[in-house]
Length: 230
Image 1 (cartoon, helix red, strand yellow):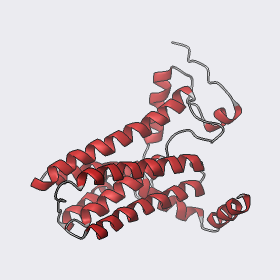
Image 2 (cartoon, rainbow, N blue to C red):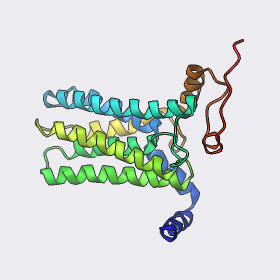
Image 3 (cartoon, rainbow, N blue to C red):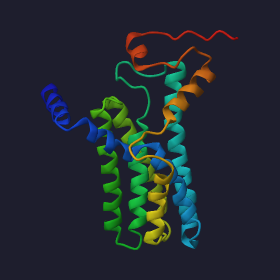
Image 4 (spheres, rainbow, N blue to C red):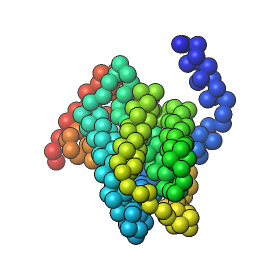
């Protein structure tokens, strides 16, 4: 197992770091959160898409709450696992697996069930690749990426399970293109969103501590002091 792990890390190291940073942006919240919000708005414009839009909002909303809660729990109160090097779900991995699967699923509306299943598998595979990129740039541990991937797959599987009960909605190609391109008008491709900093600020405020917990704190057993009221 150790030899396989070393071979994997060696293979990742042969790919330029700049590539991984560019590729990992496909799972960034600055890109995927707007897409996840725009898709149901587009679906609401079609009679068969209203129920689909509601189901997507429920599935993705629940997943997003779990991601944020796991991060706030660690950064504010140090709730994590030193044994598994776990500080919360990998948001990039979870969102990439779920949102891209949703995008591909909608794009293949009207095709055979097999094609639509392959589209979802392709989305989950892309999410897994985003997870690998998070490992390559040392943004997450293996446990965090695996947990994020499982969460993302659970979101899309739950969504597709209920979605099979009614006719899939169809969106014109230009609507899908606009949904994917619109976020680019408000940010620079490759530049990560500041959601991590926002969550750190919220965690510090909620927990009343001097600074957010870090991975080093967890691994070294350090407890962050409470902040002194001014």
